Image (cartoon, rainbow, N blue to C red; front, top):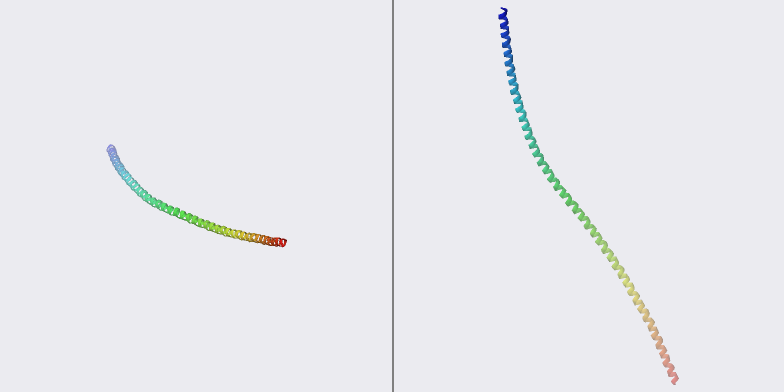
Length: 157
């Protein structure tokens, strides 16, 4: 009886061992399937993340291209505005120089006209003085000639 009991216990233990091994195999198989599912889910998540990253990268490139285009446009506008302002300042400077030169020329012309008038007045004054001087000489000579003529007439008489 002990043997039968022992044999039954051994059989029971063997059956339990087999059941435990079957459960272990089933668990290992489930774990393997779960691992494969987990790996598939991770691969799918990686693929989705990669697609999202590519989409995000494309979106960022488009946005950066738009920003770059706006920046170029704004820089061109700024450059044009600066050039226009420099040109306006240059034009104002040139106008101021032109006005200054015209004023200087007018002042020189007025000064020249004044000096010319002074020289002309001096010339006519000298001419009148010379004319008066020579007229006086002529009158003196006429008187002298007239007296000489009178003297010669007196001698003849």
